Image (cartoon, each protein chain N blue to C red):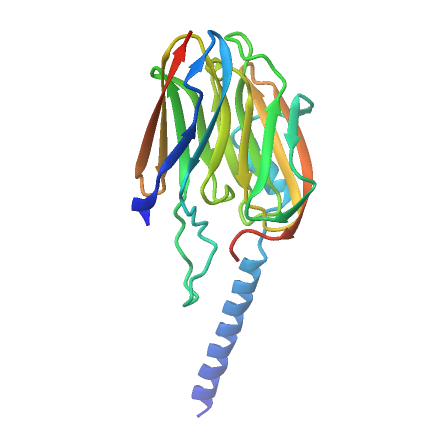
Length: 109
Length: 150
């Protein structure tokens, strides 16, 4: 299951200096809440993506901490202000400390 | 004989207690106070109304994925910015939903996400400014089909 997990991004590739751009992210992940029971009545252990960290050229932009109340395949949209060309880096971490990263370059004209 | 009957009765009583325990656990939802406490543990102080805008559907047909947008009306400069947004729900098994931490680089304190809601309940959002001021907003959402996989 954990191998199918894939982050998806929607980030503009270019922007004007000082522009505030919208970033949309989604990571395919079941987000087991730890509340659900399987066919044998056993509780399925909690396994969620609990954090997303976003940096731009190494500087922190946003840190999100997620709880089981966030839906499966967590979709998160937010904004970033770009002053110079650079790379946005995204890191998702789950309860097993497994992490996934993605990068996106933005060209500032 | 008497001893064995006693044992059986004891065992039976025990299983009833266990059953009652399970039922109680199933119905144990967070309360408004717990939602406030969950936020209060991270954001110290008394939040004022205002600045925070919570956009959600009034009625959510599917509690598994309820779209939610939180906007804080504030500039995002080095001097004055929104440090964090705390989102809690008062009718889920656990009160916490998400915490966002911003920097002036965020440009705009607005986030969208999808949340699970077990039943009709109130969402509470608290925004913390870099000077420690707290603002809050809340909104009730009617849920037709709950979404916590119970």
